[in-house]
Image 1: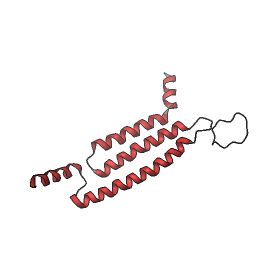
Image 2 (image 1 turned 45 degrees about the vertical axis):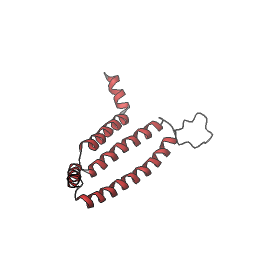
Image 3 (image 1 turned 45 degrees about the horizontal axis):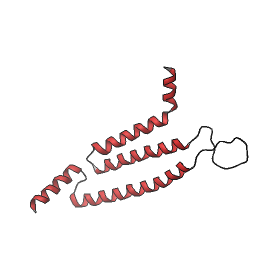
Image 4 (image 1 turned 120 degrees about the horizontal axis):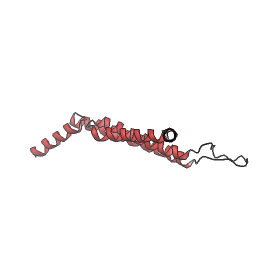
Length: 127
């Protein structure tokens, strides 16, 4: 039993990734408010960032700066670099989603998905 608990505790960061991912997915799917959907997507995205950064870290590894010491272990810098790019793309996507939400609010007077669909159906019936 202690071995199982030690393995679970040893992979704490992966458990947190799964928890954050599921919370983000739940918020995105279950909420009708567009801002809450954007927050859910950002939570999901943050969990993916954590996953990649966790995979790139090696226990006892250092930054990949060659010093000439024998037996040095290096962490892989590629996941960290890719995540920096993904963060920039994520910020841009969030900014675009928020700008679209502002436009939707100006056009429909609401940011609730159900109300927007009702307004759209009313517009289709009138035409």
